[in-house]
Image (tube, rainbow, N blue to C red):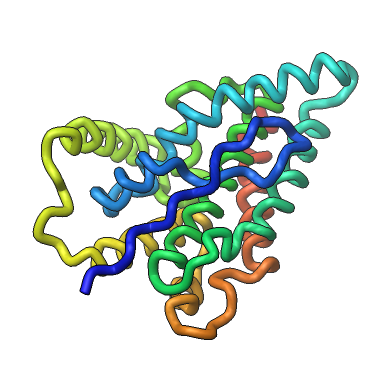
Length: 233
C-alpha cells in the first residue's frame, strides 16, 4: 500500500521579522525532493536562496534604515533569536503522523535554519541572493565538508532538476523507501544526529519527532558556525 503524500506546507508568510512562523518548503520543492531524495539538501539550498534570499536582503536593508547604529553582530543576533524561537515550534507542524509527517517536520526545521543563515549573511553584508550562499548553507549545515564538494553537488542537483521536468525519477520505486531516504537526508541537514529519534513519530502515540530542546540546540549550533563564517570578514 502506498504511503500518503507529504502534506502541503502552510502558505508562505509575508516576510517580516515580527511575522508568523515561517512556512515550510513550498510544494514544488517537496515534489522535487521526493523525486530526487539523494540530493534533497542541495535542492533545498538552491530553492532557499531563490525564495528566501531576497526576503533576507529586504529585512537587513529595512533594519539598517530603522536602526543605523545597530552593529552587524547585533543584527545577526536578532535573526538568531527569531529563528531559534521558530525552530522550537517547528516540530509537528504538519499535524500528520507516520513517515510523511516525520519528513515534513524535519523539512520545516531545515528550511527555518536556511532562512536564519540567509538573514545572518545579510546582517553581515554578504549577498543572500548569491549562488555562493547555497554553497555556504551546505557546508554550514555539514552536508558537505568543503565548498568545492558542495558546489559540485549543487551543479549535479541543478542538472537533475532540469532533467526531472522530462523524466519521472521516482517511477518504479516504492514510495516508502523514497520517503525514508528523504527524511534521513533532511534530518542530517537539520543537525539531527540521532536519526532514530526523527522517526519516532512513525510509531503511533510516540512523542513529537523533535523536542523543543533538540530543535533549538541544533539551530544555535548552526548560528555559531554562521557567525564564525560571516562575522570574521
